[in-house]
Amino acid sequence: WGVTVQGQWGAVGAGYDWVKNWGNTGTGIAGTQPASTGHKLRAGWAYQPGAQLAVIWSKVEQDNGGFAAITAAGAGLPLALGLALTPDATATGLSQTSWGLNWEHTFGNMQALAQWAKVNNITGCNAAGACNNTGATTWMAGLRYNVSKRTGLYVHYSAIRNDSNYNMDYPGGWMTSANYLGALPGLPPTSVGADPRMYGVGVMHNF
Image (cartoon, rainbow, N blue to C red; front, side, top):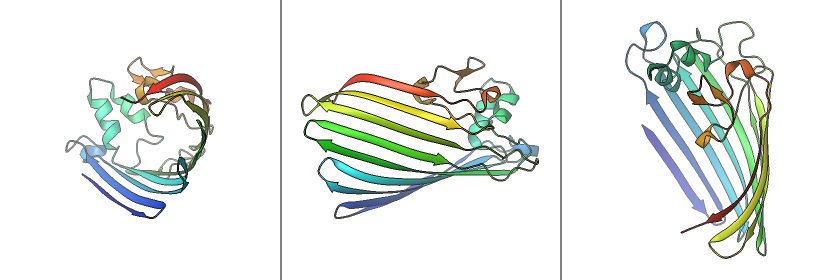
């Protein structure tokens, strides 16, 4: 289930998103039903054409193992894979919040982009110290040259600095060079504390 509420007030726009996924009954911890809940609050200020400042806050909650972790374990993969996605497999409820800032500005045919975000420590662990140092900081800087209204050349650099007990990566579209058991994109649990970086150069055309 998902709900979105959003509005526009002149140059300011804001919105809130809520979504909840339930797993199959009895596949969670001690035969319970697992679930995941997501919250996202966002706002932006378009201070001039082609320029914007924005902020985003999000919170993810996992109950009884979490829908995503249980689904991964149930897709023909070892149960340990699902458990490895959380720092404490005995915890009945885990949550994590994050927030970030975004800036974009157009100078003639050039568009500058910058982002910074902070992922806070996971909360809700039963095991002592399991949730410690489970945060990360990430940032991105990019530049786009608009050859025409629909075509642009771009270059960007982004980096993640993981805490000593966290393994955040770039799994979307398997952009990362890392994988877990050759089945899922992203840093494996044994690579906590790694600091992935990504460089990009390309051409974008909007059809």
